[in-house]
Length: 261
Image (cartoon, rainbow, N blue to C red; front, side, top):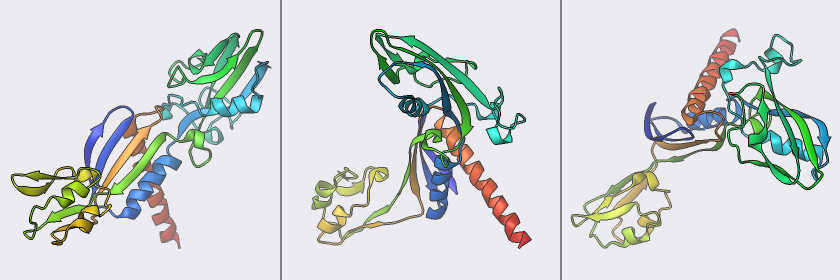
């Protein structure tokens, strides 16, 4: 498998996976979505809530706020030395005390660990009116997306086939394919039809449908364009790396099981 990076920054990575079976590409996608651990609020302790939102609704909203995650700092609750009772190695408390009138935002949470806090300060939590108060403790723990969507580290995790587009000598440069392409993949260059942006091709086949000379072909390959967008809890490339590591570990476990059988 070859990996070529097209775009990479803190929260987004676009890469091309070459010469790889589609089953493996999809396994990497599923591993990133379901098995890469992140921190998220698991439950809240409500000391005062006179807002118009029930405690359960608040818990759900707060649970979906992305939290900065250093996976190596924390243990899963069931694998921690405390036995899951709660300690600095497996959970972080975020406290909030607000009075109306105001809109309460995620940036108002005060975390026991300054590095483990909401990614964004401007996520609305609740609107408090005059005389209303909210005093809670939110407890964040490590988890995986397979258990609940709030632990998913990605907002976008998708791939598509990169086709091979061929234009042979029968082409009479009628321009019909260029005009028919909805994504401007083709262009006229030096009096010939050429492929301008193969990464943008969706394999809609409009170009082949309008070509009366059958001079253009679009064929599937073993190359895939992979797009990863992080919710901000960890960098996109780290999510990709950890997803591959999880997949490799599961493959090793499978090999051991087969050897035992």
